[in-house]
Length: 476
Image (cartoon, rainbow, N blue to C red; front, side):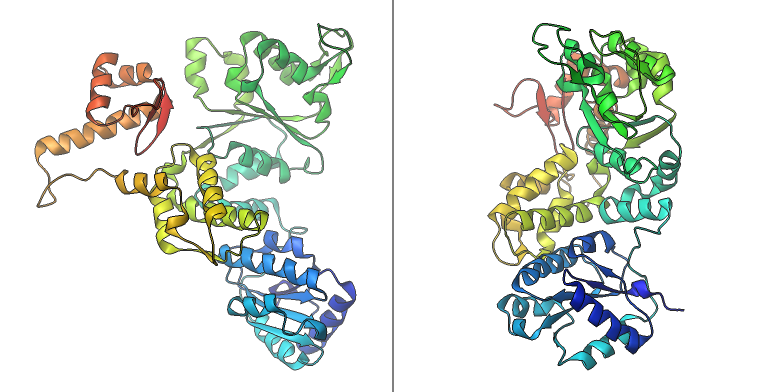
């Protein structure tokens, strides 16, 4: 039996929507769901090949429809899209410009037959639109991942377990790899989704402010405490609290956090009244906490409490299949924000973005895409719109062996392998040269000389503590 979600109506005019819905029901024997324009992006996936009817009853609807169509085409959605308008909008300049991206534009009620014939074709077997209300947690997680970061679909089962069970979660990964996105996904797919999702950036707070940020304070608790403050644990209520850069906490604050996790109790700074925590805790870190435990800078018992379910996010340079979906989503968002008319990304531009190593991960990618959209013109994001650094670096990120026969001498192969080993060691050591030298079994001076030889040191003017390569960046 054909599902009605193979055909969706979207619009703000309920009267028009009900009339069209009734006509489609009489024609094909089922009543398609009616959604708002703003709901459409969340229903589209790279797999959905259903039929989407956008209803335009006034000029404001036409402008919104343009945005919906742009986002659908930027995301390479296989859905078939038509627009049904009232007679007054026939010949609209914007709708005429959208024609290459649509299956049709029909006026109600003169072209009811065309709509009926198209609706019959639109309900043939295939992949229906998402149903956010009735879909299961695994389906919702998979849909979110496949639309944005398909490489992480392998985590879907573990993410489902994390969403369904009220336990602490630890997310590890370099800065900008998407740890906040993953934490929010767990929250949005859990029983706590109707409550608040709050973030505490532990790395940005000085030691004496962390306790106040966590637990709040009473008036007069310290100099400058002119009024009482509610901390994030209390403000989160029964929602989720993401503790970002958890590794930045000092041992004293780690002890306070351990108490909250174990007993659920805390007191505001300067107060005596014990309060209870009801929020779910997710912790995120840019560092390997096992190393921090071994160095004595992170409590072993707290690590075990946080490590009930854990996820490691690989850097973007190891997830090239995610770049396309991420870029298209960013272009759609910034195109709307800056009033651009982008419907696609040029293949040369996308290949260049995929070739760039993105040392700053998703955060750097988003900055580059935002700049590109700002400087763009026309209907497509082109290679020359990208920041110069991106295509220059992308072209030089792979160092070829200078051979005529493609085999390479033993020396060239050895040096290529040595450079790769140094890069991997730096990545494993979270970019610390001292720890990387220990992993490689060489002195720090030897590692420095090797990095200089292979072009892994900072360029002049880039600062003494930051190096940049074709594959990564980091500090000493």
